[in-house]
Amino acid sequence: LLVRGPFDLIYASSPPLFVGAAGLVLSVLRRTPLVFEVRDLWPESAVVLSELTNRRAIALATRLEQACYRRARLVVVVTRGIREKLLGRGLPPEKLALIPNGANVAMFQFQPGRREQIRREMGLEGIFIALYAGIFGLAYQLETVIQAAALAQEDRSLHFILIGEGPRKAELAALAGQLELPNLTLLPEMPVEQVPAYLSAADAVLVPLRKLAFFNLTLPVKLFDAWACLRPVLLSAEGESRSLLERVGGGLYVPPEDPQAMITALRQLQSDPALCERMGAAGRAYTIAHHSRQA
Image (cartoon, rainbow, N blue to C red; front, side):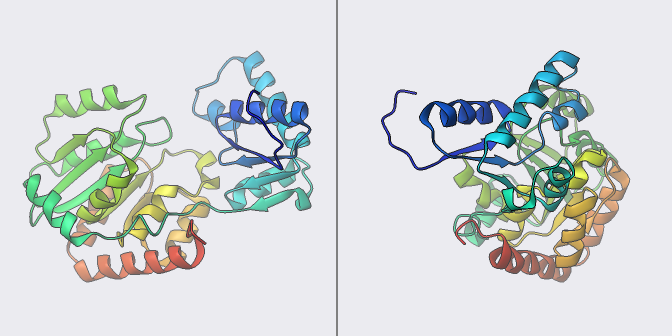
């Protein structure tokens, strides 16, 4: 409100929806066009994940969402599923622009030197590493990863690493501590600049979404970050992301919330390093061609 203008455009990215609200207010007060980016359907996602349960709050949030759509000169969506959903709500196709999620392919690259250094420092040389890096939130079923580690705890050739923070970190750390798993390491959140090195240190990257139909609309950024670092992905999600994974050949689909299936898929990759290499290379080539942030 205080910064001086004039400005040509206000670009508001949601969620959180309150960023859209701020953009809406500024657009009206400054008489400036608003572009509203929808990276996740909110409050719908909050209702599905039980973050938002109060009926009055849901109704208010829905009205706010609709006001943002009405005011926006353009609505940017990141998946075809979200686009179809908004078309179904009556938004005209000319008001919608699809700009899919992607990776910073200049930052996210395979780093062989850092791979060996990290593995050496962690005492994991010669061991197959499955890694998750991201928020410990409600969308991801990280219990499945911990349960998979428990199933494979006698196998010292396979190790799991979970990196990040979030509202469920304490709960998950308590579960891991209770099980005392020798093949599981929890690491704190780190600057994004360090993440490519840890992705490079892994042999497979885990994207374990919860078993909810809502996630059929999603296309996780983690998929492209892993591919940009030449890593194969174990994806637990249906819909758009699974279709892309299988079309690209950049990893394996694992049914959501199935720790035994996760172990089976990891052992398949562990037994075939050439397959891992082909999947990672296919993923990076596709990401550079279609999902480069630079492009």
